[in-house]
Length: 199
Image (cartoon, rainbow, N blue to C red; front, side, top):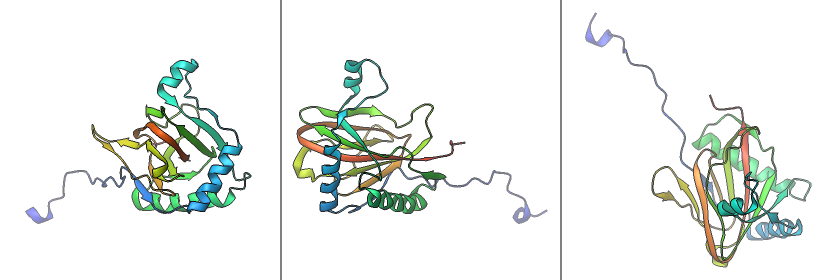
């Protein structure tokens, strides 16, 4: 048997296609973002929780207000837009086996001087597996200071630009945080894309 015909003894590995994050600019127009903010504020945002029963301890990890939004909230068009964008970006950059959104949109309001969400991942025990996390910036970055979304793959954070209407998509197991808003108010729309458990 010649050298050229000798079978390769190594395993035939596939390359990892998963990117740390992806984005889509101008998913929503300024007017559409303002409409979502108006709807979210009408739902009377309440203090966000973390699963920690002690309110003060929970506030040490997260200080923001949220409201849950659904297609029936005159947002059917927004759900369709997000689903289409996620499908496109997932095909290009992640290739996860996913089947959709089952939790609705989380409208989030971070207010100065300390609105933030500390380091965390978006995994929650005993709910449908979250595989991709979506974060959409709803107001202009000139409206506030701080509030950066930071993603961690190493010691240095990845900070996607916060343009109004921009959608950022990343694996839900990624360690991330929203840094404190020090001036003004930051509004965002968050949701999670679910699928079969990783294996």
